[in-house]
Image (cartoon, helix red, strand yellow):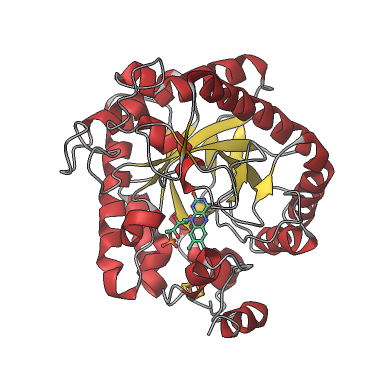
Length: 385
Ligand SMILES: Cc1cc2nc3c(=O)[nH]c(=O)nc-3n(C[C@H](O)[C@H](O)[C@H](O)COP(=O)(O)O)c2cc1C
Ligand code: SF4
């Protein structure tokens, strides 16, 4: 067993007990109305048993109208008791584990069954959000973060990645003429205003982080120099990292791509698995900035499942060389929710084989999970054929 993997990390006063992060993974199995169902709660109980140092609960919508999945979760007062049960189940299984809620507005990634909106440029079949509606979404993020505290979560992950509204507003091709578009200051207003308000209202010790796509792989997307550019240029995204640190945020969760458009970048599959190497470079770049400029922000890397059974060696290298603070696994948490516990006990692990069946279930709007190692999802997959 390698010590670097199981060394605790301080995130403000919170101790993350090892370096394994279960990244947000939508299971599309909430009850009607967006409350976590028994199936949802049981998934987080299992992750608790797996002894991940940190579990990020999948994308939870801050409003009722913007769901990407038919059975996606919504954080509102009506659903609060169910979220409390989810936290209790997780903490029962792993009392000293950390649990954050990922908060999102799905924006242009909303399903056709929902309010499909856009912020940057007007698009067919999308409703263009007004400035006051965007201000309302900022307030909804704040309200949902305060509910996350009531539910017992230890922190929030403000979703600015993967093409959802937080990313749409951030990217250089958001040239809208009002206070939510154009210059860097306007495109970071959503994050800045929400976090500034939350810093004043949240209890001491509650963790604030954000997940970003360092490079989206689209023209004018995050990680490019201007609205007309496709070529990667991380300068502006590194300024977002600096801003997060200056706002007093605690971590940056580094990802890439837009699953609906450039999905192989976000979650490489077996034929595209070498794209995961870009994630290592992005994480190292952010961590080097933090160290060089003596900033406090901690760094989480993504796409570790893409290294399959080689993931532990990659983790070890990234941690011992100081290229990251924490290592995030997505699909591996579906393939084997007990992975860190098994690694620490020297037991065999069910390694993700990058077959994409879970993604296929998700995009078909089914309950989704691992269709290789879990019988329930195996059966679900058969019904798609
Ligand atoms: C089925 C599925 C659901 C996902 N749901 C989310 C989500 O809710 N929020 C998020 O930020 N990323 C989500 N992702 C992306 C993963 O968190 C992760 O970044 C991606 O799978 C790459 O990491 P991996 O190689 O370890 O799987 C999802 C990915 C998949 C395959
Ligand atoms: S269905 Fe395939 S890609 Fe998804 S978790 Fe299982 S093995 Fe990994």
